[in-house]
Length: 152
Image (cartoon, rainbow, N blue to C red; front, side, top):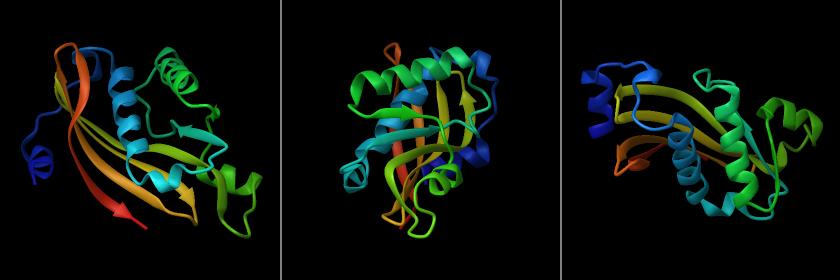
């Protein structure tokens, strides 16, 4: 409910006005996605981070996010969309050998508050979508609230 109210009453700010590094907010958000529905993570051979809708990130910020995941997960980190991966793997079954993390929508509410809708997708094995509020506190971005908005 709180997150929905932010959409109705929040004022929008520019990314350059944010406290801290926006890449750190994305890392916190993607890590929260990794924690949710951990069954989707089993036996993954890669993590694909789809930055298609993350138009606000610079190449340096994308590299920082990718390096974080390379350092913390023992799989290949790639940048591919779901359709690209399905075409490369097995389009007939719709099953992926890895997971795809993607951003759907980002709203900057204030310099220390943002809302992100993001998904973790594992082909026909399942998907979860989270809407997360991130707050900048004590010199770091952290997920303060999250709510599932889609799951199968």
